[in-house]
Image (cartoon, rainbow, N blue to C red; front, side, top):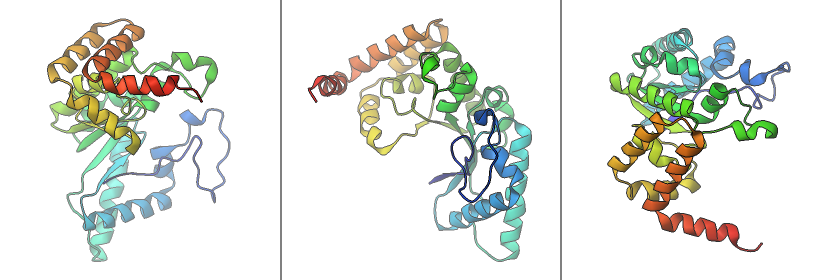
Length: 260
């Protein structure tokens, strides 16, 4: 089980906290920024996760890490609370793995530094796309600019994977991109190790990936990394997905066309 520490902010707040409105909440007081300032909240959470780790295979990851300083601060607090638990004779897994979500371009740029201090990355594609392309994904007027296959996004994912694998740590992908069977072959080709998706999407992802040859996925990734057009990359992704799992998309098309 991978437990993400509190990702409060934007549209998610604790009901008992009076958080002032912000001009731009997606760039404001959220996630790890919130936790590093609200130490009492963070302490309770980290201690709880550490204690849960004594019961099984538990891992933890920080959201919205934008640089090394935040990671170092968070890791220092984990060590502090480990010392507390030892003093209180409360059990926990001394080797519990800690990872971070890669959701900002700055995190990608310093991913090689972060990878030296972590056991895994999880690329949060929803926020990474939003921040990299400067597109509010909830704004209908510019929704057409929110493109998972934008060449910049493909290159950011590849850079993150490369930095992680140089340090021999795993990379997962979460967000809408990870749950899309059309885009799964591209992510596999870019070297991603794991996909995180909502339970209803798992069967479709497995259906595509089991019929996919690694060489096909890698060829798709090479095309995407050299391509200048998001539309062309998406088209090639659709072609490969339909080629390896035509039945999946024929069924979806039939459902979409069926009368209400």
